[in-house]
Image 1: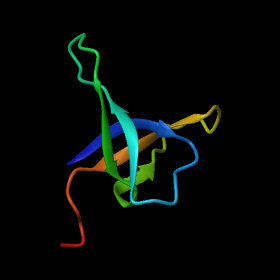
Image 2: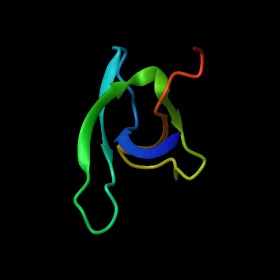
Image 3: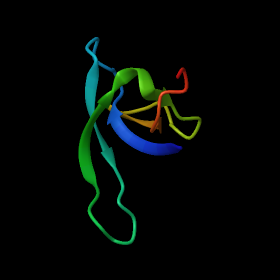
Image 4: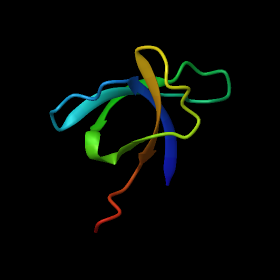
Length: 63
């Protein structure tokens, strides 16, 4: 499943990064550490600012 997440525009070289997921239904959402390799810059990202909109794959497609 693909979920939209907000994180730093420049991803770290390490294995994980903290991103923010919207919880929906007027909830505040939450910050979660996720593997960098599961993030892809979203087509909906505007390309500006210090944060970016990513698509997060909640499972590893490679296996």
